[in-house]
Length: 467
Ligand SMILES: Nc1ncnc2c1ncn2[C@@H]1O[C@H](COP(=O)(O)OP(=O)(O)OP(=O)(O)O)[C@@H](O)[C@H]1O
Image 1 (cartoon, rainbow, N blue to C red):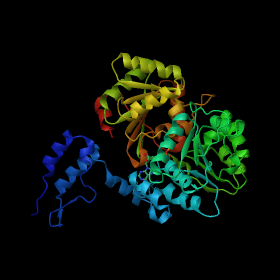
Image 2: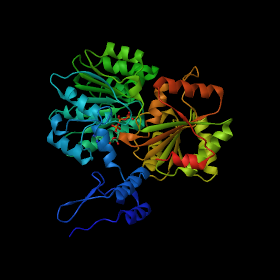
Image 3: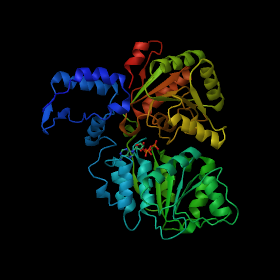
Image 4: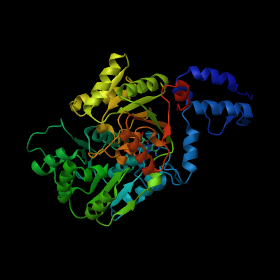
C-alpha cells in the first residue's frame, strides 16, 4: 500500500521533537519509498516544506554534506572511497564505525602519500574541521607493527587538551585493532624512573615527550618510524615549542617519516619547515581558500566594554541553537566575563590556562556533553578542539599579536571551532575601538572575505543570521 507522507503535519511535529529523532528522516532525495519500493515524488509544496526544515537546521543535513562532497571546490570534495585508500580491514572497520562514509579532500589526497612505500614526508594544509586529525591518525595507525613492542609512532600536539582529543580519536579508530597500544605523554602522567615504554603509539606534548624520550630514556627516539606535528606552524613558530620540537626532531633517525599538519602556515614557517623536513610533498591552500564559506562572519560595533557585554548577552539570549565559544585575549578578561555572566544567571563555563589539567579536561567534558552551552576561553582553546555542536564563535576580544596587529592565523583557528566538517557556523567579532576596528578590517582584507555588520540590539536581525 502506498501511503503518502503528510509533510505539513510532519513539520509541525518535528519542530517539537529533538534533533536526533528527526535526523532519521531520509531527505537526501526528497522522495519517500513506499512499501512496494516505489518512489513517491514530493509535490513542490512538500519539497519547500522540507527545505524549510533543512534551513531551520532541524534535520541533520546529510544532503548538504553530499552536495559539498560533489563540489570540487569544497574541502569535503571526494572522488575516492575509504576502500580505495587500501587501509587495513580492521582500521577500515573503525573508520566506518565512527560514521565516516567517504574521505574528505585532505584525507583522500594525503593518505595515499602517507601510506606509500617508501614512506614520504608531508607538509599539509587544510581548512579547520576538514578531517586532518583523522587523516594523520589513520596514517599513524596504519604504520604500526604490533609485533614490535616499542614506541614506533610519535605525535606532538601543542596543548594538553588537543593531545587528549587526538588520543581519543586514535583509540576510537583502533577499536577493532586491540593489538595496537597507545600511551599519552602529557602533564599528570607520571612514570617511575627506569620505566621502558612498550606501547606502539605515543601522543603527547613536547615537554613531556622530551622528558620521557631524552632525559629519562623511557623509549628510543631513534626507533620512531613516524613523527607527526599537529598544528605544525605553532609548534615551529612558538619559542618554547620550537626548541623542544627541534631537540626531539634531532634525535629521530634520518629516514623517519615526518608529517606536518595545520590549517595555517605563515610563509616564514613554511620556509623553516622545508629546511627541517627532507623532500616533503607539500599540500597548500591559496589564501582565499583558507577561510570557509560555511562560516558566516559578522562584527558588532560597541563603544565600550559594557556594550560588548550587552552584545554578548543579547546574542546569547537570542541564538540558543547549539553551543557557543567566546574568546577573550587574556585570562583576566575571560575570568571577568565568566563571573559577570554567571552572576547575571547565565550557565557558562570558563577554561583558561591557569586551571589544572584535570580541571581543564573536566570543564571540556561538561561542555562537550552540553551541560553548559557557552564556553568562555582564551587562545589556549583556539586550535584543534572539535565540538561538533558549536554553532557560534564570539571574539569578545579580537586576536592580536604583541604589537597589537591582527593575528590572522589565530583568528582563522578560533572561528574554525564552529562549522566543523561542512556544518554551518557563525563568527561574531566585537569591535569597541578604532584599533579593534582596524584589526577587523585587516582580517577581512587578509582573507578577502566579507565580515558583515550586525546590530546586536536588534533581535530580529540576530535571529535572521541564525544557523
Ligand atoms: N571522512 C569523514 N567523514 C565524516 N566526518 C569526518 C570525516 N573526517 C573527519 N570527520 C569529523 O569531522 C570533524 C572535524 O575533523 P578533524 O578534527 O579531524 O578536523 P581538523 O581538520 O583536524 O580540524 P582543526 O583544523 O580544527 O584541527 C570531527 O568531528 C571528525 O570526527
